[in-house]
Image (cartoon, rainbow, N blue to C red; front, side):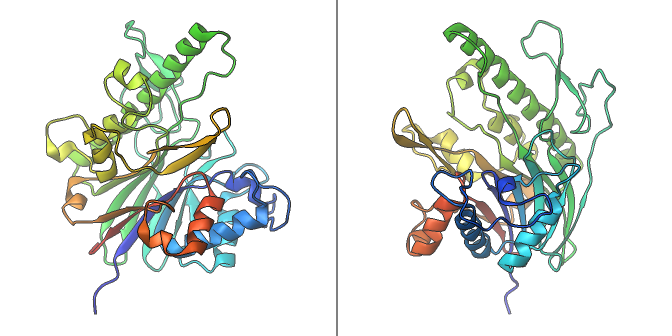
Length: 349
């Protein structure tokens, strides 16, 4: 009997938090969700279809329901998993975010064990330039004036120590990198200046993550970095200004293959000369009255895991023929979120 592949996923669920009350109960009603022209019941139903189809052993959920003094990410996600009848029925988070969006891990406890295992020393109030813990402060010279600035994550990356049922040990880092838009800036020059400053901060966050990646790779860890980077090769005009996108920085710019992560979708975008690249997100731009697509979600793996021949898949409702053949799943993916899930299957792990 062939062993079942191990499937991991990343999925950004737009305003998942708005689908639950403070007690973690699902709001299955006809009230509008945060999705345009989609009710809360419709979005929850669509998410149930998508998560059931994914049938993943572990999912890093971006924009998971909030954790605060009244609300619980774990309670909401485990309620959802029970209602949908998912194998992945146990939830956990790391450091709570300063927003209403958390990074969470929903997994099958029969296939995986997982624990929050943050790496790095807590920095001082001033901060550290040496990959401090992700809930503290990183110092980096953003504008090459020989003065370091303080960098913090509004959504600290989720660091997990995961062990598969067969005993394989993995390190997972769930990421939601965010570059703020230029709200509040008046005039073209002010907007451009603020946009550049915010992009620099995002790149500094990616450099911070990359320092952590270097540590794991040099230690010989089997590493998976996955999530929404709000960035990618060719995503905006600032890439030329800074030389690399944040995604390229995290993948690694070293010539040493032992220090390079692999994501075939990112590689396709980097190598494309005609704008041909996969996409993982679909947004409606009202001024242009059309949809815009982008490659924002990634699953990057260390060289030892890449050597196992995993299979990556973007669950795009229009670009994946297997989904096109299932109208119910295609429509559910469009109703559930403005991002589409990305999965990776390992034949043996």
